[in-house]
Image (cartoon, rainbow, N blue to C red):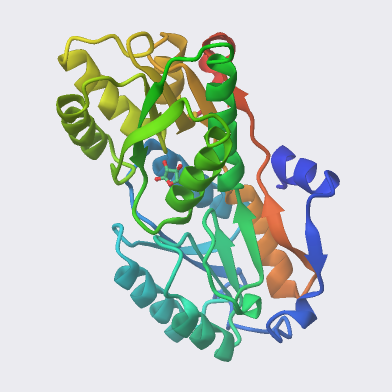
Length: 328
Ligand code: AHR
C-alpha cells in the first residue's frame, strides 16, 4: 500500500528522479530473494532512543508485514560499529535490498562500497550520510532537518517581534554527528542570527533521550542565571527538560518557552497543556514509502534520488485539535 504522504510527495514535484541504471550499476537482479519468493529487506535501525524511533520501527515492521516483505531487522543500540556489522551480515546473507538509518553522517563509504560491489542496492532511511559518491545508495527517504531547524527559529523570531531585550536560549542537541543534530542546529542558527538579541548561551547534547535531556537541563539551570527559551532537537529531550524545570520551581512554557521537534504523542500532550510552546513535526511513518521503494529498486524501476517527507508545525491550539487521533 502506498501512503498518502508518499503520493503527496511524488505529486508535489519536490522529487529529483534518476534512472536506476545510472546510479550504482544495478541490474535489478541483486540478492537471492526469500525462499518463498518474498523480497528480503535487511534493515539496520539506530536504536530505541526516543518515542520517534519506536514509532519508526513499528511503521517499518508493520509495513513490511502488510507489503509481504521479509524483514531482517537489526537494532544498532546507537552504535555505528553495530550498524556496519549488520550491513556486512546482510551482504553475507545476500538480502535483496539493504536499508538503514545512519547513527551518524560520516564513515560509511567502505561498507557502502562493499554492498555496491555485492550488487545489493541500499536505501537511506530517515537520515543521510555525507558520502560524496551518491552512487553508493539508490535513494534517501526522510525529512529536511535544516528546514525543521529553520521553522523552529522562525517561530521564535515571530514570537519576539517588537521586543528588544536580550533573549537567552539554551539548546539541547541530538546525538553528536547525527544528521538531525547537525542540521537542526544549523537551520535554527541561520534564522536567529539576523537579530543580535537572540543569544544561544549554552548548547549541549542530550543524546535525543529523556534522561539526558533532564540531566543537561539541570546543569543549564544551575549554570545560567537567566534562561528565556529552550530549543530541544526532539520531544523526548524537551520532556526530560520539563521535569528539570518543574523541579527547579519554574513553569515550563511560561517562565521558559520551549520549542521541540518531532510531534510524538507525549510531546503533543505537553504542547496541548502549554508546557511546550511550539513543535516542528518530523514524521516517523516511513514504512510504506520504504517498502514501495525497496520493491521498485529490486525490480530495476526508476526511483527518485530524494524522497522528502511532508511535515507541518503545531501550536498548542493545533495540538489540542489533533491529539485524540494522533497515532504515535
Ligand atoms: O532522525 C530522526 C530523529 O531521531 C528524531 O527526531 C529523534 O527523536 C530521533 O531519535
